[in-house]
Image (cartoon, rainbow, N blue to C red):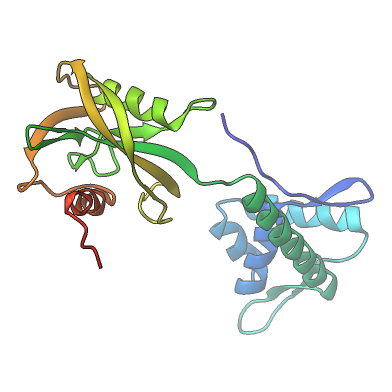
Length: 238
């Protein structure tokens, strides 16, 4: 299921223009041909002309004009009314899109866990894109009503078969391009082992790697592990 975001410009209660009709008008303006515009949109000339007629009947004025003859065999263009209506739709569309992105499209929240067992770190090999067959820290998305600490323990168990407890927060990683799917913010926790047995999941295979010999890592997990190793170094006192 998905939210269907379709702005419509209405005139006297009737639907005058949506994204499809606006695209048709833009194609006419760009190509100077209704036939070419229809072909680009994958529709018949008759269907495209019917869309134009429907808009003109609702608005009561000509939206496109055609000139026949000449070396080019005629031309179709937008009237001043057509240009004005298209501009009105595009301006309202931009405003609505901006509001939609501001209030409805939010960063996703995830957690990742770092568990080291006898100088070896627990990593999982991904079975699906993005980064299929690449290695990453075990983790996943936070469910509604779930605490971050609960999420990292649950995801770690699901992906590795290990029961853990949270020791402390390493950091929060929020670069908008760290995940190619969307803007994902991850809280990374240091964990300690409580029990369980290493077990692959449907989405990942689990493996231990020496900290000094890591495979290429997905997302920004190389930076995360580097930050973890740096956190272990004694701090200099000034």
